[in-house]
Length: 282
Image (tube, rainbow, N blue to C red):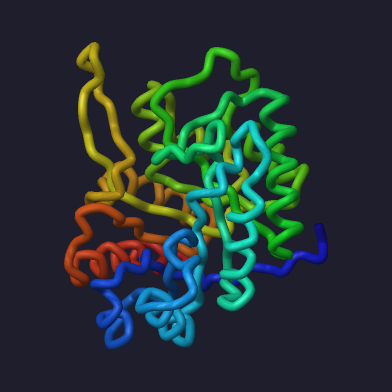
């Protein structure tokens, strides 16, 4: 799809926009060079959220991150939702748009979660059709995010890296690498996160996410990580991120913190840590 508009986030730290941080972002953003917003929070017709976003968009490149398309769902995409997304991207003209490799709808009902998929040829064909539809409607290349997983489907015939790589090959989409999701999935499924990243097509990555996770135990007492977005980035995730940046050079890197949101200095410090990791290879 060569007529799609390109993406251009700066290869620097960004943060997810939270209303309580609006003043700090406008006055002293520190190391933060761009912001990301969840699309579904800005699909209304007015009010303070849109006013704040318009003001921030005059100062920062904006990444729009969708959480409601259910791009892996078995049914067709919600055309009304896709229309609202097109309207948002139309006036905002974001530097990037991304969505999750997940499903969240069933029989017309929306589930408050991003659920994993079996990695099969049938799933691959369905998700590729949905990506093609999204990119055609929006007129822009999208990024697809690797999920955090807790269980694997017995019916899967492809591994995740191969699945994502083939999706990008078929559709021309880019990838969003969530390093915390890689770590969470590896711990939960007793696999090797570094080996996963060694095989990941890093040349297709247009954005990196870093977030926190909570730790629990499953019913057998085994370690279980939950992708909570409510903690500081853990040291093992920073180590994996440093390995990625050493190979790729600086990448647009988002600090995700959506629950138990801290005061601005804490979030800015996380962005500063990402900047320091990127600095030696810039």
